[in-house]
Structures are given as C-alpha cells and as structure tokens.
Amino acid sequence: MSTDNRLETFVTSWRTVALSLIPGMLAMVGLVGNDFSAYHFVGIGILVAFVIVAWVWNNQQLPWWSLMASGFLTGAGLSTALSVLGAILSVVTHTTVDPSSWLFLSLPWVVMLFVITFSLRGQHISGQVWILMALVVVCNILVRVKNFILVDVSWSVAHGVISVGLWAAALALLPVVIGIPLARRHGKFAILFVVGSTYMAFQSLINVDQQVRVNFNSSTGFIAYMVLIPLLFTIIAPLWYLRTGPMRAKMGGLLTLTGVAVAANIIVSGWVRGDFTLIIWLSAIPYIISVLLTIALAHFLYRGARAPNTRFCTQPENYRL
Image (tube, rainbow, N blue to C red):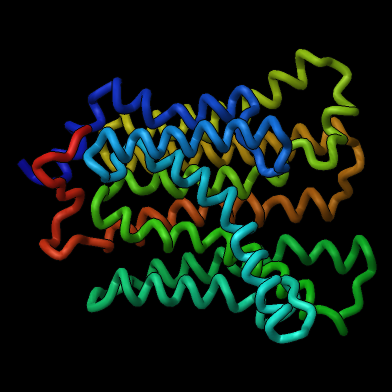
C-alpha cells in the first residue's frame, strides 16, 4: 500500500481523530488564549499534561494526534521565548532591544535559517515555498500600513513600522519551519501543528482590550461568538482535513473554514465595537490572506520534507496510532 493510501487509512480512526481535537475543545470553553490569565494558565497546564501523556503512552514519541496541542504550546511560548532572548541580548549589548531593533528582529529569522538548513539539507525547496513566504511577509507589512493614516506616522520612522511587520511575519513563519522535522515523521498530519500555532497567533484579535465583551448587548451572543471562532478554526477545519479524501478537498476545506473563522472574528469585532474605520477594515484583508498563506505554505513545504527513505510518515514498529 502506498504511503498516501496509508495516510488515508490512518484518518478513519475516530478515536485518534477525537484525541487530536482535544485542544480545540479546550479553546471552545475558553481555556486557551494568549493573555496569560490564570484561567488560560490552567488550559496551558492541561495541554502540557496531554502532550506528555501522549509522548509516554506512544513509547517516547509524539503521536500525530498530539501535534495540534504541540502547536498551541509552541504558539503560546514562542513570543515569550524570543522576548526573553531579546532581554538577554539587551543586557549583554547594553542597548534597548525591541521589535524595531534589527538585532532583536534577526532572532527568529536566524532560527528559521538554521532549522531549514538542518532539516532540509540536500533537498530542493520549490519556488512555491519561497513565493508563499515572501507573500506572508508582504501581507504582514501591509497590515501595518494603516498606522501611517491612523496615527499620522512619519515616513521618517517607516523602518519601525516595517520592522514590526517583519516581526509579525517571523512569528507566523517560524512555527511552520519548526514543523519540518515533524513532517519528516508524520507527513501531512504535521499541518495540524501549524493550525495550532497559527490559532494562538490569531488569538491576539479575539476580544481585543475587552471592548467586544463590553459592547456586546447579549451575553448569549457573546458566548456564541467566543465559541464559534475556535469551533471553526480548531475543530471543524481540522476534522474536515482529517476525514475527507483527496488532498485538494482537504486543503480546500481547511483553508476555507479557517478563513471564515478569521473573517467572522474581524467582522463581529468591528460591528460590535463600532470604531473600525475604512482603513482598519481594509487592513484586515492582508491579515486574513496571511493566515491562509501560512497554512498553505505548510502544505507545500511539508510535501517536500521527506524522510531519508523518501517516504512520508514512516513509523517504527512500536508506533501507536
């Protein structure tokens, strides 16, 4: 049986599919977020325990159904880890280090270069991958163009706005690159890692400054809004990917559902808050595109991240599903 056919056979197990969606269930009940509240720390603790148990149960190897949970943890910890590194650099160099500092900005890009070089050594990276990476960077910069209009930023400090866009792009792309070794073992399942990490990055738009909660007239409507977004992004979209057949259908559904989740969040936020100007609405377009391009990039990049025997998802004999 071919590797691709084996993959399709793997996803027929509802038991493992249900296990893979546990992080999404935590997100639906509000236990997963990036505001470092006590409530969300409980969710992070549950995710850590889930990944550890999965690793131990699977003979000290991460099973594919733990990848989205691992992505959640990576997305939550990445920005913090880079900030700590930036603080260390600031102390060592006796300079102020922030996203507008080229020294700080270079950190995630250097890590990406190292991981790509180490993980894909001797393998050809298609032009599609480089184009998608460039488009993610461009979209993240375009999102910040609104600052020039909203706060009358001078073009003399444009490098600061651009550097923030580059920083955001790096945080979006770094989990994709980190996922390359996972793709060498788990093949197409590794995209669940990126779905998890991208959702955590996307969390920064949900309930910004609590204004959505304050302006929502109906508590029931607010709960429905907070449940709908993670339901689409972390449960229905991955479920579609795992349970449909052809890869075109998998990716089409995954991108459509995650795109609808991001767009719905922005639309509801803007409508409820009532303070979105035209430029803010327009800046949402490249943001939505950047999320979709990040997931599409993972698909194309992982397609080339083959194990040494050129087969996807090669499992040792004691590997459990």
